Length: 263
Image (tube, rainbow, N blue to C red; front, side):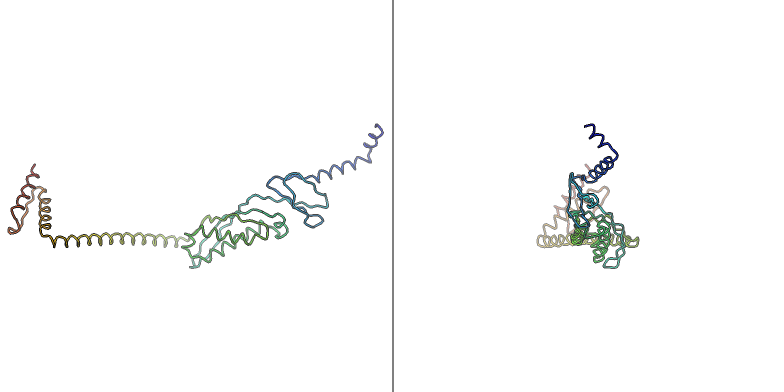
């Protein structure tokens, strides 16, 4: 045993032991649940490993780690000319994740840069086909349309676009003033329409009342007396009427109204 220990500790076996330890340490790999490793063996795609612990062949195998979590891309502001020739600046956020790590490595050189660049061009293309009113009022539809286009373009790369959100639409100051004037004119138009409708309804009711009074002279007489009674409630007021139109009932009504006022 002492002879074996002395041979193992000799300078001949010590470098071999160090090399074995290095090979084993380089062979054992571990990745998290949300990660995968793409293995290339002698330049050829060998497979996808993970999650957990796995082994590779040092020097022969080359491992590339991929993150499968959702990534958010902040698309910088893009100058867009709408269909009705209005220049606006739009920025958005694109959410995507890697669903096929092998395709993300072999089908595109840099999937993150490619997805970001494609998001910018798609954003300009889609919004350039719309008018300003659509751009301001149909954001959900635009988000869905951009997402579908991006998802179709990035599918061969093993990328899944999970969402697109338009964050801000910046308008020129002149266009903001024009939109404010348009909104003010629209509110004024609605106010005039409501006023005219009220006048029409009031005129219709007066027409119906006139037709009713024309068929019932007694009703219009009662209305006249009611009006006189209301006028008589005012203090220091003298009412002058035509003698032939004042009957006994009229005088009685006027007297009653005047007495109530004095009380």
